[in-house]
Length: 292
Image (cartoon, rainbow, N blue to C red):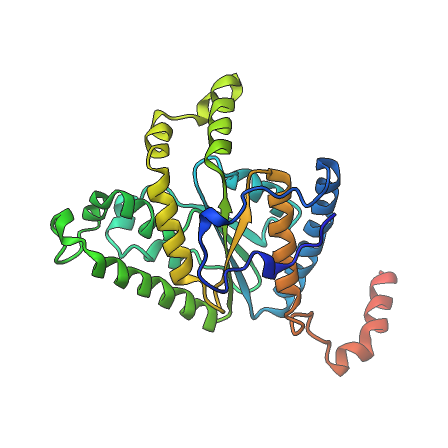
């Protein structure tokens, strides 16, 4: 099996998505990939336990991708061995009435992880420079001063929004949140096949929506805006990773492998040491309990 190196997927310089392959099986069979993922899950779980005891960092994992890219199943398979109290998953849908009465980052800010925990964003604050850019009429629902028609939403509006997102992530990072952003890079053909499977399998029909076909027609536009968003917001403190997503098992393992390798670099994350009095009395404490 090919070794997973973070640098192979991290966006450190401008990228062209059309030049990045959506296929990578890591040279392994599915059974081997699943076994390797199980091992990575255990290591992530152990790290999260240490991080909770350490109490100074939280981890934010942002996952974006086109419809059918495999976000839901990836989250389920990668994080299922973590302590249930140590990871919180947020699936951001269309903003509620309450959320629309705040700025667009509000609902994401209050979902940032507590120290010692993981927050996983299934779709993220980037929807506000992706979906709303493809459908700028959605921005009108935010009731922003000076934005009364779609014509009021020009290039400077999006420039400002990218700046706000970068500032949001920088602020989170400077206050102890480790930020990782993953784009599940799916091919148009693989999306077609996955949509067909939803139609052909009765138990998957519920996942299909006619709207999926309408959005599919806007594929090129979405790819253009994803590419710009990634290039404008991949930073040292909040990097983007572009993961080949045509093979779900490999994609899950790549994400888990990157995440663990990057987190394991924080050598200061460890359980606090006991003070001298506690250490000196450990045997006495055990004796008291054993003699009850």
